[in-house]
Image (cartoon, rainbow, N blue to C red; front, side):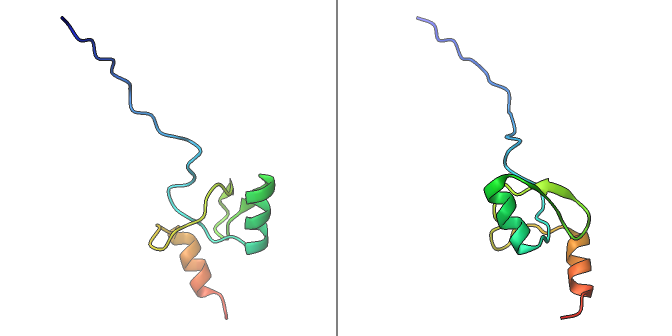
Length: 72
């Protein structure tokens, strides 16, 4: 009796979203999540919203710096 094992290469799902999360206008974020439109983060990065960040998720350092420099 012999057993054959198939080896599948590791693949990464391209629909999981960005490596980092970006600061985006809340209304635009909701519209993107529903309609699939692309949004522009405050750092200039363009992307469609595919998932929501969880506490502790990595944040784009450029977005964070710009956001923290804005007046309240």
